[in-house]
Image 1: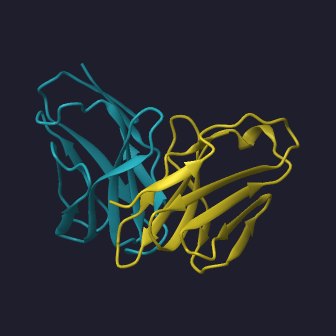
Image 2: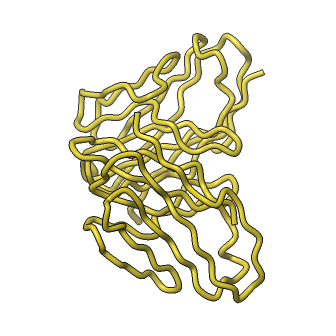
Length: 112
Length: 107
C-alpha cells in the first residue's frame, strides 16, 4: 500500500535535547512538507522540499532543521532553540507544488 | 501572508441533518482543498477543486469553488455519527507553491 509513515506516534523529550521526527513516503511524490498543529489551531508550515537536496523555510522555521537526501525521506529535527516544541507534527507529500497534499498520521511531541 | 477565514468554528447537529461550512480568502486562489481530521490523526483529503464555479461531490459531500475564486463551500448531506471531526479548507494562491489552511470547523 502506498502512503506516508511517521514515527514514532508519541515522543517525549527533556528540554534542551534535540529530537528528530521521521517521515517516509512511497508515493513517488517529489514534494514533501512539515506542519505543526497546536490545540484548536490550523496547520502552520515549518519547511518544505520540492526536490531532493533542496528545501525552503515555511512560516515558522525557527528552531527547526530538515534534510532531503532521498526522495522518499524528509526528517525534521526539533532543536533546543525551538522555544515551544510541544505540538502535533504532521508530514505531507504531493506530486509537486500545486497538487493535492496527502498527510501522514502525525507525531505528538511532548517536551518537559 | 494569505488569510483564510473558515466558518462556523464549531457546530452541533442532529444525525440526519445537512451541514454547510465555508472558507473565504483575502486573495484569489487557484486551488481549494477540503480535509477532515479525526482526533490524533492526520488530515484526510476529501475533495479537490481546481476551477472557478466547479462543483464536485464525494458521496454525501459536495464542495464548490466560488466564482470569485476567493471562497469555497462544503456541504454534508444526511449527517451520520462518523462525520464528527474537524474539517479544514486549504487554498493555493497564484504562483504560490504552498497551501494556506483555515482554522477548521469542528463538527
